[in-house]
Image (cartoon, rainbow, N blue to C red):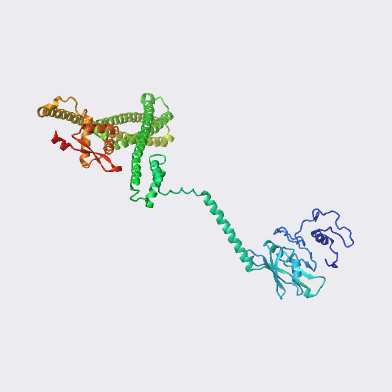
Length: 584
């Protein structure tokens, strides 16, 4: 560096500057200024660290806290010297930083300053890519990275002097500010676009990671694949996959004259799967009915226990035991009784609701036997009437107990002082209101009791009418049987010799009548499965074999015919009773 004649009026400032340069502080004569200097630490002990630019190192000092003033020191270069500004002056103003700024504006350069001197000063801040110098004492410097601009801004406000000259053309005050350059903006936009592409790629990878896998592609139609799908349609575990393949083939237009029979057989297999689904549904319905029965039995058991608990409360409310309890005990017993009755009524309503649903879903067989339904309704009404009687008795006992308490309060009121008159009157009013409420409740219970008795009488009358109707029907059936027997003996004496009749029971007679009616509605005949599906709606115990045996025995009434060709060949039963009557 160029030697300078500086006065040593402030040895501590000189020592600080030499310490920042990484050298041991020495005086002009060579003696050490501070004997406790530690070269490993690079600073003097006892002196707080400062933040000037470090020439030759090319690093950025850490940010200065806002409450701590920055202490700038002299910076020595080969061709010039930089003197710090007055620390008491405000920091130099700068414009808003453009995005991706790597270019700075440097003003206040000496007139004799060259690009070599500018490079010497600012290459300490980082790698300089380009310097564009103007003739009017300013230039633009472009760095390789954005953080180097912050280092360059640190030099704003420094006074520069070339060598040891004091000429005005060799001095100047540096002003460093952000500069807006098209190259910086273009690189920043390219970087932002690259980051956006990376973010989109990262988001797409995350979406693909959580996206469910696509279904496997459906194979193309061939005779081999057709046979494989036909076998899968017969398997319950693989039916769903096979039916999807069949649907895709049909939608693609694979059906033609050559493959029509194959597709028809597959569709027929899909149709036969309906029967398996119906059987599975029936099994699930049976399980549901069993679960309902278990729930109903458990609920009825709980209801019986509630009835017993309520009966205990009612027996405790009778006068024999009620008079021996205290007022607090009576109050607790009455509250418990009300709560138990409410819970019992809720459970009873739930059970009645289940029974109503069962009555609404009653089958035709249950409708044909109304006597059992009437008996269940009669038993329910009888139980309700008994419950109302018990409730009526308990209300009467409570009313007697309240009357006794009112009489006791009246006696105590005559003996009590005038100060207690107001409280006793309030108690009397409350008791009177309670009595009125109990009387109203008792009247309501009596009205309900009368209504239930009237309903019970109506049910009994309906039961008698039904029994008389059943007896009349039985007499008419017996008389009709006798008349038929007489007519058969007169008209067809040969039939007496027949030992075995084709119809062996009344159930078979009913089945013959129902089947004849069904086939009369279907003049073109029906398959045995169709007939049995209709009969199983009436009685689920009917099986296909029983119906087919019965129809084969009655050859003059029912006739079996074959219809269709090839894969569509089907057996159909027809009603031929009118022709059979002429033949017999």
